[in-house]
Length: 165
Image (cartoon, rainbow, N blue to C red; front, side, top):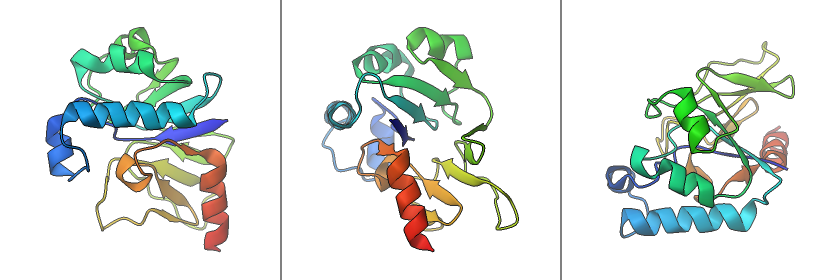
């Protein structure tokens, strides 16, 4: 199975406060994110992290606690080298958006797509901003605040978009 998540910001207390996340401390947030991830994702599953994974000093430790084969599409807070993130445990790391299944553009920031384009965009970055809908016919936001701090499956995304019609 394929899952998506963005903006985990592991161990970053400032994002917990800034986004009003429902956790008392960064440690409590990390624990909840790891537990929710592992309750959902099996070791053989693939997880695309669409940017802003976490704090540098904790990345390798936290990544090793998470189930699945993990891929990172770098976000604005993922400033280390691609090799650094591979050494932490990501299978692959991408500096730019990628396309999967010939249709789905995976990016950190939302991309412009319209009904004349043969693509849909999965993204993060906007957290809970009211300026962006969670999903439409051609996009889905996988920021943790919008997906209950739990990776969301590709099938769930497709179903939500199909019901939108």
